[in-house]
Image (cartoon, rainbow, N blue to C red; front, top):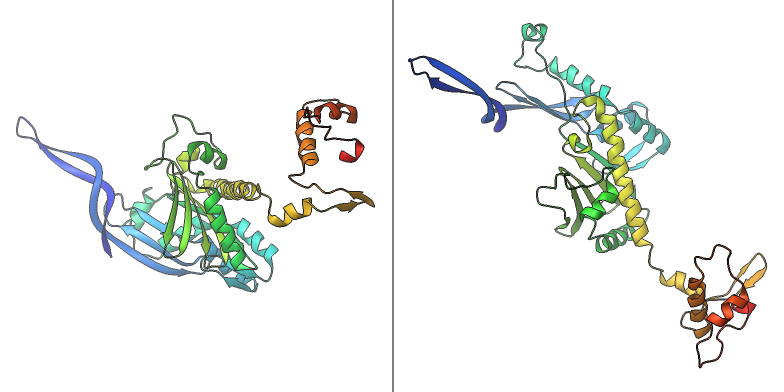
Length: 343
């Protein structure tokens, strides 16, 4: 049991001019007792429920989808290794993904119905028969995507490079690349404004990007995997109601944001040639039995070729060798492009 704040009905006594007394009721923040029940559910594994003891008697559920999947894998006798609240390895990856896709609103509702009937609740059977009941709503939804590295040290180096190259992802024009709704002047800004936060807890850095009431977090989990997770704190930010039947839609939306972030990072990470790629460009190759000359960066003829080719970028009919020759001259120097061999 703990005393915590909640929104509840509070009465205010008023005295009328003729001596009468009236009461006005409004919802305010009050500190009341809450009871926590930690359960081991056959379908969800470890979970907890929190009961408020004052009108309107709110109930809060905290469920972990990874634990639900683990329970299903155990029941199907599929071997797996855990990575905290994720998966490090699985004997049947396709079956694992299929089970993950099966989780839906009906499973959440079934959990609540199962334990609401067993745990002591302020609503009696008479209250429920009269139509007083609880209806579930989504207060927070977290959707994660975990990529396990065969060589963890390479994954750590990759994530550190991602942080350096994407410090501007929190800007409004960049956030709009990740989320499906365009940011306008009417879009509510995050509490502390648009920003990219890099938080270092000891030696474990994490990247945070905020959008209205929601945010995306990325970190290297237990030195083994890159974890990308989107937390939706208010479904209304995406024009979605909070009803539990919309859980599947919010999960798809969160997965889309996670994958879009990874795609943006992949593009930015591969925009610079590595030393190996640069070396390969400067060595001749053989394609279909035909030798192709190398591109020696810094060579005057190679640089002249690049210069004239870019000048013909927008010609729909293309260009010929004789069109390149005049462009390859740099008076009073001699011609830099000599003929077909330079093409």
